[in-house]
Structures are given as C-alpha cells and as structure tokens.
Length: 297
Image (cartoon, rainbow, N blue to C red; front, side):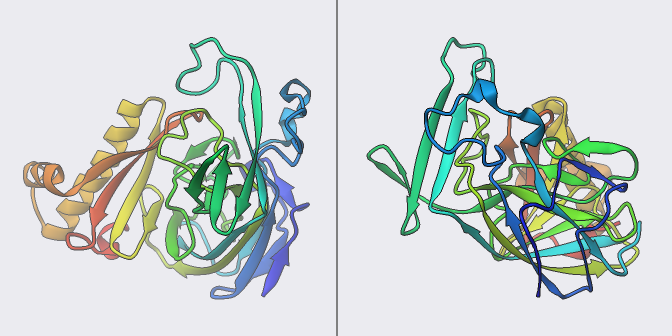
C-alpha cells in the first residue's frame, strides 16, 4: 500500500500537475486529507475574514494510475473513510441557499465521538463522506471547489466507504485526487459548510478499457446514481434525466418515447448540493432495472 500525505495537495484538477504517487491497478493507496478550510480554523474565535481563500478546498494527490488512458473508465473503490475527532462548520453572509437573509459570520467547532456528531445537545450519526473526488479534465484547469464530468466538488453524501465511483478518464494516468471530507452531510448542504474535518481515505483503483460514463456514477449495494451538474438545478436535473433515459434505451432497446416514460417509474431525481458554483442532481436507478455495462458508452 502506498500513502500520500496531506501536504501533497492541489487546488485545481489539471493534466499539468505532477503525480504525487504512481500506482498499479488494484493497488491500495491511503490519502491523508486536511479539512476543506485548509486547517485554518481551529477554534470558534478564528476570524473567517482572515482566511487565506487560496488554501481552501484542497484535494490530496494527484494519483497516477498506470494503464489509464483517455477513453477508459477509472473505477474508484472506496474501502474506508476515517475522520479526526473534531471538525468545524462555518456560515458566511451572502452564502448558501439562504444567502439573501441577513446574518452574521459564525463558526462552530464540532466534536465527533463514538460514531456521533455532537451539535449542542443534539447527536447526529456520523457518516464520513468525500466531498471532492475527481480526475484531470480533458483540457484547462478546473478548481477543486467546482464540479463537472470529471467529478470534483460533487458533495454527494453517499460517496462513502464500501461504494464504487466510476469516472471518465481524460488524460494519461487519470491524475486522481480527493479531499473535503465531511463527518456527515444532508442532501443540499444548504449553508455551504457541513462538518468539515481532516481524515484518511483508503482506496483501490481499477480501469475499464475503452468505455466511459457520460457523468460520474456512484454504485452502492442496490443502486446506481448518475451524478450530473449544471448552472441551475433545472439544468442539472435535465442532464441527469437525459443520462438515465439514454441508459434505458441502451439496456432495453427502447425508443426514446418508451425510455422517457419509464424514467418516471424508475429514475429518482435527487439533489446533491445547491451551493457550489454548479448545482448537483443525481438520477438514482435501482439495480433491478440497470446494469453497469449499459451506463458506459
């Protein structure tokens, strides 16, 4: 197993970055990650006005996967996600879904103990998830705080241990990176911050040759989630819907009309987040109605 320390961090997804480590398919790698605020907030008196915003939303990596080339699919098996015993939540005026309201900056240190988050007197079950996870795009640079077909800051609460993520590969080696662990998150992440926390991610990679998903796909025990995004929620929902309907057409050999109709029965549209530069919506399809090979083109 290889290890990438938290100091090996990038702030854009780009093919220009030198790999932090090179691995072979099916080899394990452990990524140490800092929290999304770059470890700059250690107590509730830290002023958000003094944050170095160039050190926010970092991702550990990149990891070069041997044999991965454009046109392939990167299979990311998430074996474990561990978090430290203390995280932080913040709100900033004019941010989040309720940014039009008048409110003050606020910082809250959150303790995590015995599998639970302590928010004042309320306990919330911890479910560590990876907010930012992706590969280098086909061209240019994309901030690790944004998202797209390469993955990125998708903030999908089910990117957790014992799931698989399928990402299209756009450059040799894929140049994978991940970070922005949350101790837990609800759909939407409505105030922009969840419980931001440092931690470790244990991963194993594989490559599917000469096929790609249109959008990143998360596989759980019983379903697939097609992770689309757009400038608006409507646009993101349309992209997720188009991907689902196209998959039904491939699986069943149906016309667009039949597949579109079936989407109302078998493709659940759900919100990932509403606060990032692009909005995230997923189309969730039960494995009763879909196999992976029909989701890859």
